[in-house]
Amino acid sequence: MLRTEAVRNILSWYEGETPGLKSNLSRLLMHGRLAGTGRVVILPVDQGFEHGPARSFAPNPIAYDPHYLYELAIDSGVSGYAAPLGLLEQGADTFAGEVPLILKVNSGNSLVSGADQALTGTVEDAMRLGCVGVGFTIYPGADASYGMIEELREISYEAKSRGLISVVWSYPRGGKVSKEGETGLDIIAYAAHMAALMGATIIKVKLPSAHIDLDAAKSTYEKYPVDVNDAAARVRHIMQAAFNGKRIVVFSGGAAKNTPELLDEVRAIREGGGNGSIIGRNSFQRSKADAIDLLNQVMDIYA
Image (tube, rainbow, N blue to C red; front, side, top):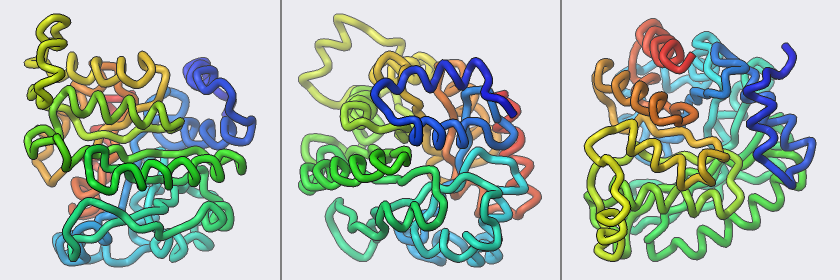
């Protein structure tokens, strides 16, 4: 399939990037049910590291099998599949070329306190597995955030030099950020902007709430108000923070929720100009038939 005008337009935003990187970004944007629309839905399965195996897969035990996760990504027609090294390795040969892969190269776990992540994969691993890019989490506000940002700088440089895209999970926490503020409008906008400033090809953030967290920001939002009570307006503000919509921003599906709630969030993302969703637990914790049905409804909204 030839690139659509929507995809060509998106590629034009990434000035200074290599043809290799734009080719891999195009592979992602031209794959699956949303191919060519400029929208993406990605299946992420890094929750086993983050939350442990039972909390992640016990609701749908077949999801313990890495091949099942590949099959879910392929059969549902999502744009791409993101996971840590071991999950991608276990299926990379069997399903080679059937779905764009993103290697999550850092991970945390819930057995330690403090917000930080260890490097768990390399750019060379991503190249070996035929990935289109690498994924990396930063925690703006955390004590470890400066170190994570410096690690991202190195990983991003290495990935881009090999033509790989960077997908940045930008999840604020700690420091001056309150617990409620982790999804506050001002904080999510700040997190998206920070990822854009770091050169992220794709930015992943949580869907913002109406809360304004930082005292220093409240007067600005009073002077230049955003309709915080409208979810689409909140998404639109996040897109502003991502170089005025010239970066791809996808929004986390978050904790497990019912289908109507999730679809309402997807409609808000679409109406606010967001580029799509990255939906993990809300898909792989359901039966395969139910997961595919849900993902198809999400992609129908974006299409």
